[in-house]
Image (cartoon, rainbow, N blue to C red; front, side, top):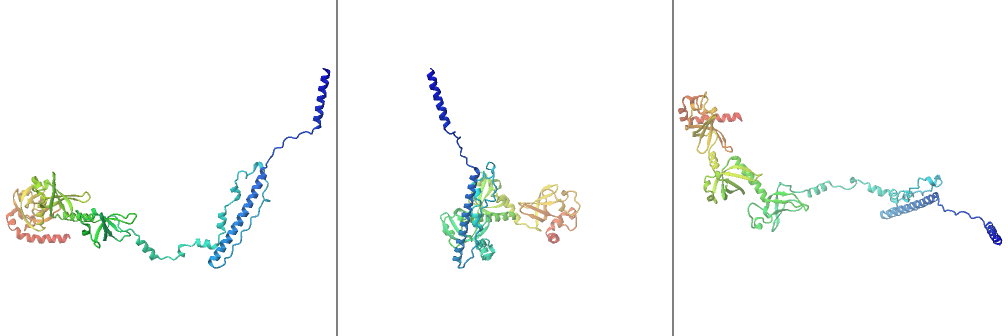
Length: 431
């Protein structure tokens, strides 16, 4: 046991001597890259890039000037080269690596503006002058400009009436030159009223036609035109004028239905109610016959044309009458305001104020129901069916009708001539 302890103590002494003989170990060094060194390196690269860009821009400007001089046959003075950029590293103060304001910047921020801006700033003055030239520096012909505008001006607006020349046709329509950059096209269905079986015969080449523009030009400059629409417009205008004048027209019956008969007037479809026919009970037999009719309603917007055979008789009677004419009739009815006189198919009003020039207490003092009356026509309105009559103008003295009506009526023809002169004087003074 004592030997073992001595052996262990010798081993421990040997380990301690070996440990004291080895030099002490140093701690591991951690590699540290300074931010300042990295930033200095980036600034150096940026300066080198700028220097290379300046050199390239200067070389490009020299080449452009040489090319312009060769093209124009004259030497252009070269622009003075841009001074090279001098690095200003010495003026940049030292920065704290841990608190550096360049830490968030990218390479594009460090390189600065692009080369395109520098090339534009170094462009030769001739190029800048050419780009800044105004329209006044060029030749400008105002007449040619206006002529070009006129040549391209749209021709034909919706609802306009134009005149053109037939230049061609197809199976579905006709082409008409109306002065635009493209001809107008008239569909077959719009070539006229009624059915047209032979377009070539109806619209030979070179025929001058008047048409209505129904649709303005499309992308190709072509407008849609119509002879039918223009004919309908003219027909409505003519019918309106006839109705305004109270004319009687002749129409041919083309069909019938439960309510009446249909007819054709100036290319328009008209309707005559059964109540307005002289033979309304057998109106089917009227198909193919010609009747004289007057106008009840004319409306082009709703395309409504209503006629009357019975009113035609009245209108025909109106056509025989005129202002200043002496007429004879019977008292048909007595109203508080006057007498209605039957003149044979039409009635005239003899107002109480123009029966006599004297003081009239009652109209029956002069005329009674069924009495024969001679009177002058002083007003005539065929459109409204009104006839104004006057007997006071036949009196020699105011109130003569009250005391000697028979004499006044017997001498009415002679007295009417004198009364007409009075009417003319009244019309002249009124005019």
